[in-house]
Length: 151
Image (cartoon, rainbow, N blue to C red; front, side, top):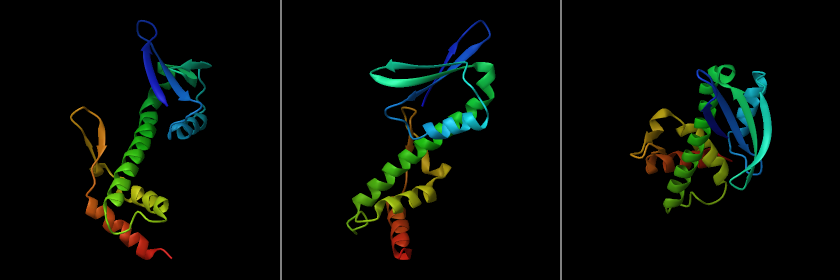
């Protein structure tokens, strides 16, 4: 999901939520569920080809959607955090020579993402992008503990 905010009139703005229909982002369904749960209907709904991608565009009035933008941003941030943690954890598990990358990795990685999904696991890089920063040994120790506990 891509969020675009643009001016509409002197004191008004419009919000466009853009969903890639062929390659959905991980947060798309949760964002759609949120809109449905809150009974938020777009003023305009269309499809378009954007940068070679077939997209659905939901356009809302800024005042109508405004108080929900923070929650939509949090949905998007959580999805980004999970993606960053997954890559960071997979990198640490693959870096060891203790065989942790062998078999059953998906379930272990998912459990570790949940375990390490906390504010202290993230930093902002110099370029302003969010990055996951985990101690490799702590990740491998948690993975070994989970492997030992699994049947």
